Image 1 (cartoon, one colour):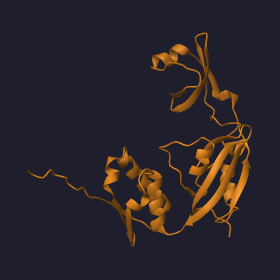
Image 2 (cartoon, rainbow, N blue to C red):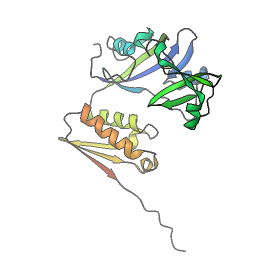
Image 3 (cartoon, rainbow, N blue to C red):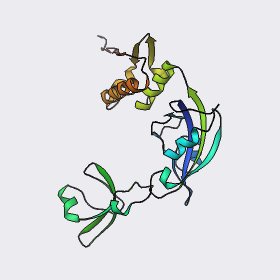
Image 4 (cartoon, rainbow, N blue to C red):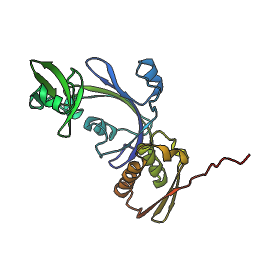
Length: 233
């Protein structure tokens, strides 16, 4: 049976730019090592997706909605359904001094944040800087080799996957999840206490649960600290 809008699924994929065969993203460690895309601190595992939420390029979501669990395909996605077409109006030329005043040293290839938008510096010269606000992959056809690993169906498992999406550096089995009626209790492991922005992650998770799990009306976080006092001699 094909997947449906709203399904929670786990997928493995390798994404490449068609013209250059350059890998831009993947979930598989074996492929990462093979194509020299591997990073020691990278996380290589199936990725959580909620279909029809815009977590993936439009063309990839459309293809997944015609697939079944366990199926693998290679899908070619045109720019307009991947990262968009290049828009010449998104290329701006500014005086270099405008960046310098913001504490930015203009360098070709560098990224800058201006007015809450990210731009790549395409050229520097004559006291001017050319900024490209298009997505770095705009205008590119992307080829995905994707496999639907599994569908996440139980609310408890959905919560664990949503936690892992927010706190990917800690194994999800370290968290304990208990659902009783409309109440959800999440017990955090001590490893989570030292994660940067853990409070932001907890707030984001509350938003996820409110949006995606309507049967849950109350969420309780439990945090237990073990005091490690030095023993007297």
